[in-house]
Length: 95
Length: 156
Image (cartoon, rainbow over the protein chains, first blue to last red):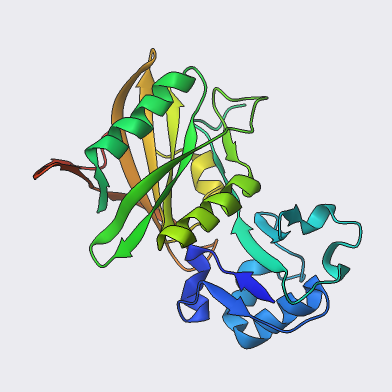
């Protein structure tokens, strides 16, 4: 399956905007990705191995956090994973 | 340096005036060039922070995915983002810094005072990780037909 790499992380995939990886589940595909590009791991996962809070992983059009089986969700060769860091901010620190 | 057309410059500033007193936000598609990011398309996005839209913005990841697909079709990349600061300076805030994760992208901020767009500044997010990331002032070069107008960055 293909994993779409966002602009800031392409530094770690040799400039590739899309990477083809094997895997039967989302977790296996991500493991294959970070196995092929080890420098990506620290940008996707915390030291405790959890997906960083600002990193969104979408399976086609679905956020994997809201899929019943989350990272254990099965994937097909034709599926598409997208890594999307969040975009947010605001004009001042006060609420 | 961030390059964008005069039409795109006007469009992103007009967006801030339309959403005033709330923050607007959007996505910049273009190309990363040796001299800086060059914008070719400005994509408006919705601000999902309806609970605090006067001083917060958030772009739904679904819109980012759509923008990424659009960019790919056009042979472009996501090279930056824009948002407005209603009645606040065109300077990145601590919230902007904490929530910035797209290293190599340009973050354009437009100050909108009493509904009128004032200064627009651009900040390039640099660094290699969350610990050493930095916003650097970057000049905005506006392409006006055959002429070019330069607006130096860093103003508030």
